[in-house]
Length: 391
Image 1: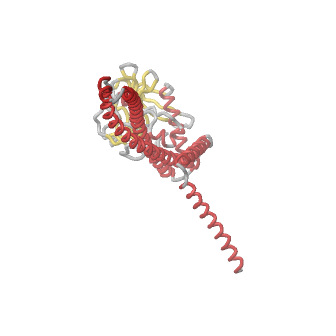
Image 2: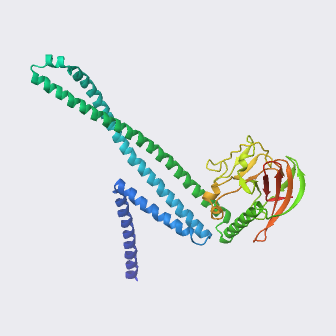
Image 3: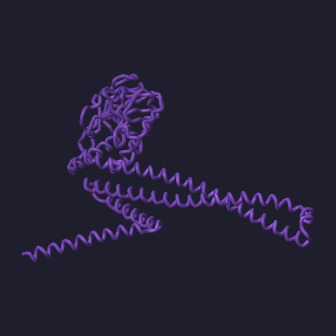
């Protein structure tokens, strides 16, 4: 029995030593890498993780797969951060060398300019003859002056080249620093999106599939409604600011929580609602990884319309390629958000402009009846849509 225990101890000790030694050798190997070798290795690892992400995207959309994508993307972004940091270090070394060369060349050129000035004065034929003891000496001094002037021109060219290279390298360094900050922002967004997904789903595959199904159903309904396929009833004229609906409180058909999906369309083509809604309204921007995050969607109204709900506006998703599209699971359902998602302490929804009011609903493949109201405005074929509401 003692021999068996001793043998087991020796076996596990050997494994521990081999693993530790292997890790130590690996770390020493990385520490001894030349800068170019390190960049080459990082490029190779980045390609491997990008290939892994592409492979995961082609597989079934499960919660485990989505988490694996987040993990791979987080690792990929971490490698890109290290890659940019290495480039900055290498570039910094080149800039330091350029600064030394530039200083030396500037000093040399200044000294040569002084000497050339003196020699140029001696270039006058009369002075050459007077200062030289014979004609041979005058000719030698003349040829020496020509060589000095040629050397000065070469020095000036090298100085100008060094200055240009220095400016370009400094510009490249600034670009890399901006890229580094952008990659750090991407990393924070990816970690936040992963944490948010685990929080919403509680790591439950069934809950995740329900979220995907609701998003697909909502997308189908919205596209059909814009295309005029909803079942509508004309309600008559409506004035600007008149109550037309109320936001459903809590979860509802195709929605996990209360919000108004507001869209603007002209001739069947959606437009950015911010181009029409007026500025100067109080709001909370919760469209990013957290409320108040600088990485959220831009809140940039620039029009003249009143808002469909009362402030303070709770802004949860913008128009276009949003933060959610770029960083969360909804990006696997749609790549472009065709309206804005907003909420308010008041559930009352008002018409942003006068027009003709229609109440409608659309029943998609999921059997969910999504209610909405539409206002056909009097100007330029504009229509506004208000979704996730009660009449």
